[in-house]
Length: 404
Ligand SMILES: C[S@@+](CC[C@H](N)C(=O)[O-])C[C@H]1O[C@@H](n2cnc3c(N)ncnc32)[C@H](O)[C@@H]1O
Ligand code: SF4
Image (cartoon, rainbow, N blue to C red; front, side, top):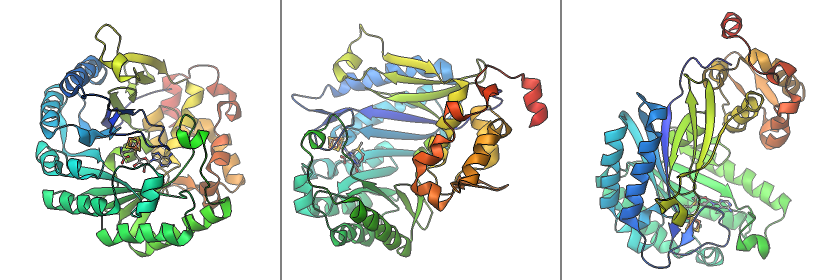
């Protein structure tokens, strides 16, 4: 392994509170019972970031993503304070993308202008569906009109980069109803759409008491017709669930994840992945998950910290990069893992021989079949299916450079 350069750096910020817990949601979010300790939480986020700075000296941020939970519950002034604190610790790239997830109920959309003025330049609105019956069965606290209004408010506030989150394969949903939701979203002309298949996640109400979901054939047909509708409307699929209008504004933050870039993660339960050239390591860290623990000054902010083993790096890289329709440039593998592509050649050839992977000088990507059966493709890169030299420690840097 020879890490000779560092990948781009992003920052993820987690806000762990919601008005109400949705029955399908497995994110680290907690129903607000009393007042949110907003100011205390901003202080703790800045403390958290400060403690991570030695890991990223001299680097600048290409993107920030504030996710949740419901980050739009906070006041714009809190983000102003947070951003000036972050700027004092880390330089921002001139084109930095700063996204915030927002829920479209009226109390929150009133704050959109304030969020824009605070420096947020991309907003991701959690619409889920434009049909009130589905919104009700999903336990959402907003209705369809509020969602449309929230979009208009975001536009008027100045946002020229808006994402809408929609889900499909909802309880008792027909193909026509799923397409109707997509068409309503397309008519609004957001720059980006995220179209997720509803999944039943353990630790959710829907998992314990499963609603009646469409069968697999219907879901496959829904996905296929939906992708066609999006494509003919100018929305290019660049990742499993991500569509960018005319391919112009894909999410820079998510692209950095999928290209196996680096990210700091601050906030309750946040995850980070950081490459260290001085130590020749790529480390994953997670923060205390429960807001009470995260805010507890007597407790360490870090819950878990572990360097990724060398024989796990290929799978970790592929799990991200092969989600992208275009896959990755062959040079990116060495640049972001420190391993030579030649070291996993048998696995690449095997995946290619199964018809799951396409390899050319310009890029390596999942074939149509591989994209459909991504788990099968990823299996080729499991540690036990890799050459033994990846399993017995280091290879001399000199040899690596000669082979490169
Ligand atoms: C962090 S979540 C929620 C952001 C925001 N609080 C909201 O609900 O609008 C981001 C997105 O993940 C999607 N999502 C959440 N749970 C899901 C599930 N079980 N299956 C599929 N998509 C899900 C939803 O579209 C949601 O907007
Ligand atoms: S889906 Fe969004 S609003 Fe609902 S509980 Fe999860 S994070 Fe909160």
